[in-house]
Length: 526
Length: 92
Image (cartoon, rainbow over the protein chains, first blue to last red):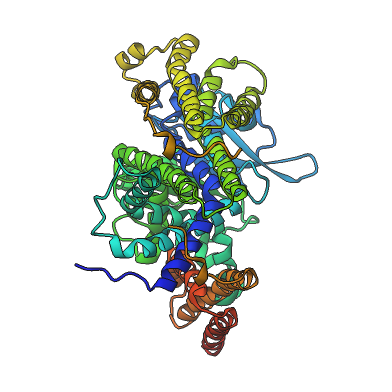
């Protein structure tokens, strides 16, 4: 089957825009994909990162006891304000209450409180002991950049869709005929080109999914603003109600008080009556009043439409609104599906592992694009000054991007090595991560040869990789044989991942590819 | 391998093409989706489709904007589309 490519003019224009877009978004996109790859396992890593969480969640969920302990520790906690409760799971056996407290002058302040589900000890989230998964998750959408971080990551997602579509158009003619083309004996430029094209074609669905869902999550306000203003005359309720039915019901803060309300009784009634999936979170509105509502967020983490929300009137147990996994409409399902596609919470752990591998492939696609660009302009058609600039930009991209993996190894190490009882230890761990990343980038820039730069980062990555399981064993006593014996699969899984990564990096270091001098990236222009 | 520069536009034209693609494309894409939405009875459904179709159609409009030779024609097309769609929204 012959594909007709674009006309000469169209081909060159789309090709040029693909190149420019790729160059602009590469560094940010690499950070997004690598941090995101690790953030996929944010919940699964929690038992590793926080050794106090290595216990089993209770058989019986006691929400009332957790709430009463919170009210003792956080005196101005106001449960009648909208309250979301994350229930304990095996991955993270703590309750987390996202609520509000009233300050002295009756202002509402957001209060996030963790409750240990075995001894019901309360800890405010700002005093949390570990922040590893959260830091990588935050880095994934640039949360560290105030106000605009999420927006920037959304735009990177949008232009990633642009780059993907334009790349597809450029490659259109040879999509089938050159599917297996991969040449390691020809020039360096040809190698990078084949690698870039082949892997990005294989990863095309994955990349489109993440371009679209990433743009949605970052730039949703660009959609909501016109839709709400034009189609709904300023009222957000209908759209929010489509996503979460608890937003389509109103509660009156002046409704009469109702004492003896029990979260546990409502929860038990609900668990006895519904069959789909596990409850992951509960949203309570107007607790303590007659018209109090409890919404149960269920998910079976297997099917694409396995999530649902049921809204229940606390006092009567009557289900007022629901998005049932069995019979949701199209409008009620779409948002949940896009979220599941993005977070990989369908199909179990295997999907997350495949997503992780594809994310690493995408990181390679990004790097190979830069190297392809540089090597294809490393000829006499360009002036020495231009070639020097290309090379400097390439070195900058490589230094920032390739240093992120060892930096992630460093944050895992810091998570264990910074003393657990140190006040504000999360600040030290995060500082070690970011300054470590900066230092590794700067040191990498010393190397004039990109091959040596790469090998430096492979070496640092390998060193940190092997140190991580050792640090876990030394600090927490949970050596890998102990965790495997005690069936702490997630803790062992993290250690095994880092051992595997160290071995892979050692093999990569040992197989030195000798690029003939004539084809090596030109360093004499520096 | 790099693009043949004879097909590419001058820096001034490039600026106008880029802005036409990004801003004009955004306005046209929004108008298109709102127009479809205003013709439906249950309007929240179109919003649920917009949340993924928008990010596919907008880059598509951006690519087209680069292919049109003169940026003023791009603005003409996109603003024209917007006006037609806005008229449909207004009258329904």
